Length: 254
Image 1 (cartoon, rainbow, N blue to C red):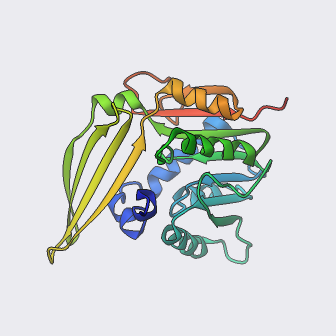
Image 2: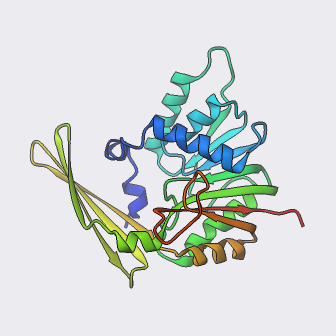
Image 3: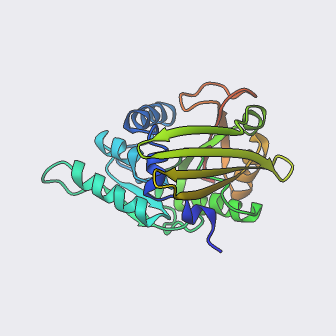
C-alpha cells in the first residue's frame, strides 16, 4: 500500500498550497537568517525542500553550498526547472537536489545548518520511524552544526481544529476535512478535489502531534543539545496559543 506522503506531494499539491508563495518564502528565510545566523559559505540542507522556494531565496542571498532533499520526483523536477530558469547567467549553480527519504540523508558530518520547514515531520506511523529523521539529521550535521525545525503546536491544533473548509480553484472545487485520531496524537486531513467534469481525486495527510516536551526529548535522544524553542521564525516566545513550534538544536562539539 502506498504511503500517503508518496501520493500527496505532486504538481496538484503546489496548486492547493499556492498561498505558500515566494513572498512568504522570502519572509521565512530572512527571519531564519536573523534568528540562526547561518554562515553563507557552509553547506546548508533544506530537508523536504519541495519545489525549492526557500532554496531560491537562499541562493539569491548568497549561500554558496545548498542542498535540497525531497522524496517527490515530481516536485524535484519543478524545483530543477525553477533553479535553471532563475540561475545567474554564466555561473555554476550552487544548489544540489537529491531524491531521498527524510530518514536517509546521504551525508555525514557535512552540514553547518539543516532546515525542516512547514511541518515536514511526524509523517510516519511509528515513533521509531519519526525518531529516525532526527537521527539522520544529527549524523548529517558537522560538529557545531544547527538544526531548525518549524513544526505545528500540538495544543493549538487541538484547540482550533477546523473540521471542514472549501475553496474554489480554477476549474476545481476543493473540500478539506480534518479530525483527530489516536487520542489526539494524530491529525488526519482528507482533501477531495472535484473537477468540472465531475471527477474526484482524493489525497490524505496524516501528521503525528508531538508536544513541545516530546519534541525536545526526541531531539535529545538523537544527541542534540542546547535546544531552544520559539513560537515563530522571528523568535517570539513559545506559548500555548502559538500557532507554530520552532526548535533550534545543536550538534555540539564534545
